[in-house]
Length: 65
Length: 135
Image (cartoon, rainbow over all chains, first blue to last red; front, top):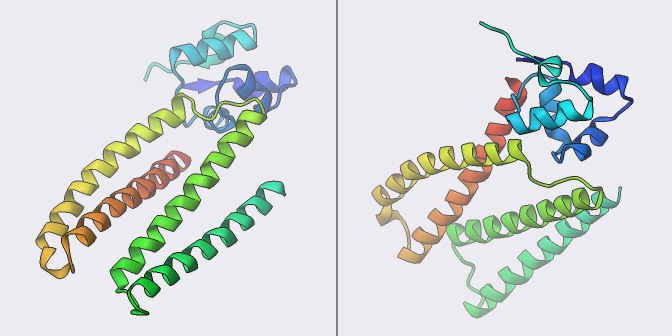
């Protein structure tokens, strides 16, 4: 699963620390998410999408294969 | 910088503590130096103490900065490390019981085994984290 967290975060002028604070996770988790090394839970994906005022599928891109 | 100073202070405090414990035990045993296994156990206790204090300080710092100290990823990593450590500890205990004649007494064997289990958990946590970085 790919995501646009880094791009959207830059657009919103947020640091990894700010985003981590907003969605109640550790900064390390944001680092892993941005690198695509961790797939978040549905709740975390929803919370992140809410921060960017977007839908989940606009932030997280599911690949069929 | 402050964190670094705290760590240095902790390190010095733990070294002093280790020397005091060693001195006390040596004095109690009428200046008999104690065997390598007992020394290893004391070192492990002190090391785990230092790690626990550093972790608590880190958590406190994160809390102060408004961040959570535990989240879904850290919990998942802890569970994974716990499972791996449990499986590894099984083999370790088997090995310890095979070598039970090599230990001076039962207390040293059990105490050492418990400490080694903790050490295995710590190592597996590091390995799980490294695996995630290298994924």
